[in-house]
Image (tube, rainbow, N blue to C red; front, top):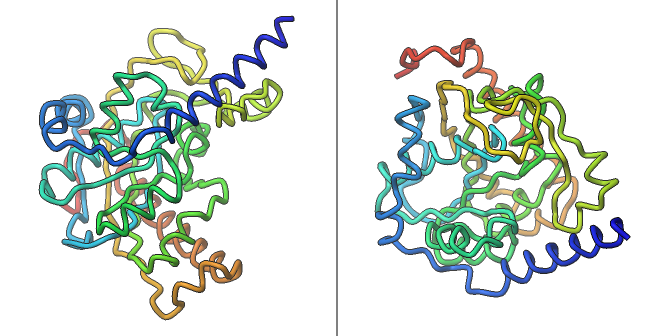
Length: 292
C-alpha cells in the first residue's frame, strides 16, 4: 500500500508540475517586480564576493543563447551572480532563462520566477523568446550539473544534452558560453543518487537523482535540503560567442554536425573553467582576480 500511494503521489506531482508549468502564459516578465525583488540576486555580493569577467563578449543587442555550467546544489548561487551582473550591466536588455517544472509548483515562488523572466524548460519557450529578439540563459546540465560530486567540481557535464545546440543552429543565433567557478565548494557533494531516483520512480516528476551531500547545519543530508553555504568566492566569466553561420539552420537536423558543435562548446567551456581553477586554486581566497 505505501508503495502504491508513493507512486500515485509521484504521478500527481509530475502531472501537476507539468500542467502548472505549461498552463499559464510563460512570458510574464515584470520589470517592476524585478526592481522590487532585485535583492534576491544582489545578496550574493554580501557573501560570495563575486567577480564577473568578460562581459564585453556579450553582444549588445539581439537574440542569443547563453549557455552556462551550474553549481552549488539547490542554492544555485552562480545563477544569482550572473543575474545580478546582467541587471547591472544590461538593465534595458531583458534576459529570459529556462527553469525546472518544480519551480512552478509553489504559487508565490512560481509567480516570482515568471515575473523574473524564468520560463518552463521547453524548447518552444526558448524559441519564442529568441524570435522576440531576447537573450535566453540555459543550464543544459540541470540537476545533473548542480549535484555533481565535489571531486568533479571542475568538470563541464551536460549529460550529453544537445538540445541547446540544435536550437542555436536552427535559429542561427550566437551561442555565448559562460563558466562559473567556486560555487560547487559551498557544500561537499558526495553522489548524484541517480540509481536511487530511478528505483523510486522519480523520473515521473523529472527528478533524475537523490543526491547526498555534507552541509551545515545538518551534516550528511539529501541534496534538496537547504544548508548554510560556505563563504567561497564565485568567479564567472563570459567567453567569446560561438557561431556557425556556414552550417545553416539545416545543420540542426544533422546528428554529426550537432555533435561537432556540441563538442566544440564543451571544449571551449572546459578550457575556460580549467583556466579559472588554475588562476584561483583556493576558492576561499577573497583577492581580486589577476585579470581584472
